[in-house]
Length: 258
Image (cartoon, rainbow, N blue to C red; front, top):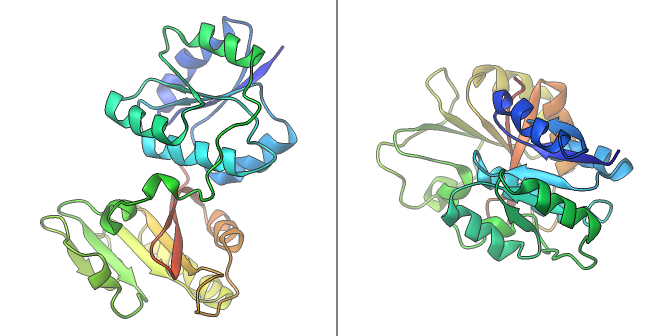
């Protein structure tokens, strides 16, 4: 029996969606966290297709698909996007025009055709940040009206880089129970390990960006994306978004694992 991977961010809907695919003879492996940590599993045991539901968190579905295409071991796995608002779906089509786009009513026939005729030369973007090209930094970071945003150890001038903030946004320098989002800038493995427990415990109910200097930047650092991700996982966090802040900093957005 062919197996497919289902990515869906609403746990209560997964059984119904999986049943549609199972009725067509597919074994379904469903996941509610489409973080990059599952890429290794997909590389070792690639499914016949990855079905990504766009009805919730379409930007996360897009980012996950870009990671799939970026990685050599997974880029040939067919991508099938299902549902979603037309405007947002069209933007994903601009990035990944060779993926399949369908509805849950037509997903079985689309999937059958996709499995039989997979793409041989899929579109691959140079960066997994392609979905954020041209977007303002506040949009990349998810800063919305009325938020209290904690900038922790931020470099000089970063607050000014944010530009015009949405109405009612408050910038603070420490996390608290009132914070809706934390952005933590970390320059070394030592700082990451020594401070991560304190940072995330203060932001238990809100997402946390953990940012590190790019290897191509002039700022010396022994941090890497893999080190940041593994440290977050060890402290009960799961990453679900990645973004380049500017020429110096990149970041992973974490939340507590449900």
